Length: 136
Image 1 (cartoon, helix red, strand yellow):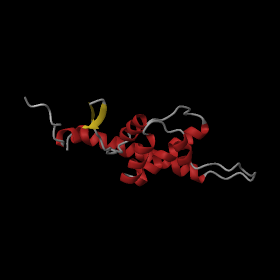
Image 2: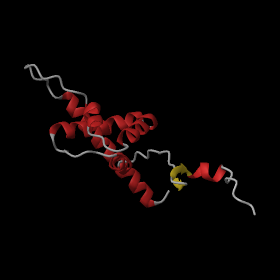
Image 3: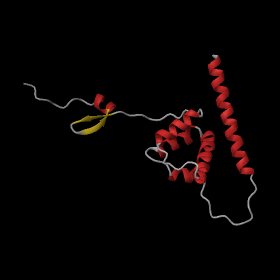
Image 4: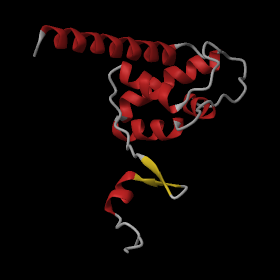
């Protein structure tokens, strides 16, 4: 393992520890005695703000890395509820965020090509037999 790899692993571990510390301090805050409005979960808050393919990325992340993803989702939900983040989070942004903190979510990829005015997957195009063309 190279020195750079060790440093990267140490940085990832440090970030994870900071995230865990932030979550634990949030759960230890004393609850006020006044009744709160029913507050939705951080995940629900995040789901409402997901854009194009965001839900797909979230579901893959939750399936592949359930514990790590929960920490990120809770922090994102908190930031969304507090108003520190007020933009839509599409799948690309969410995937980049997860990967930046060391959660390497694998996504199914497919390539579509146009054939006769329709989009078909590249694998279908390569496996299908060509149409009978005029043979003179």
